[in-house]
Length: 169
Image (cartoon, rainbow, N blue to C red; front, side, top):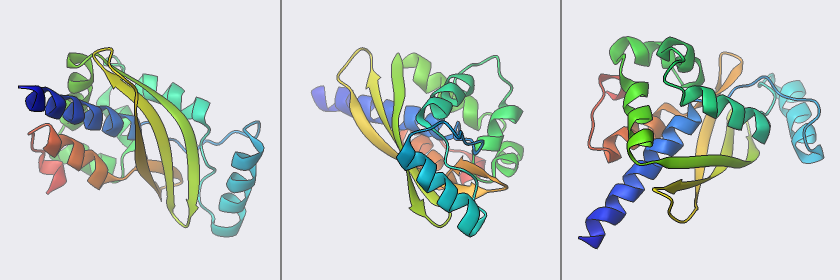
């Protein structure tokens, strides 16, 4: 019985983190920490990648992403190949949002790291049903001038929820 509950918590956490990833934008902020500024400048000038988003930006975008009143079409801009994914499965994002609500999940981005090239990660604290905070690392890729959740990460989250999506094939 305890193993089943632990599995559900892990599945819910992956869904939450996948939803988080859909919130990463590339708008950048010149008033971010010095480390982020240096990384942002290097990313923007040396390789034409979008500026690295700040923790505050990701948290703001996250709240919009998890808002059921924001249209899915608007949210797909934050998912790698999001428009194509939405065409294949219009409910992909809603499945993740529903899992977040059903498990009373809380999530907060704590750091963003530029890894070089078209890749960055965000670390986030998350909890399910008032439980202990856990840390997750979420991968992003540069696409169309923005940082977007790696599609494979979102698809893995859905698979862990025992759901399928035509967008993942």
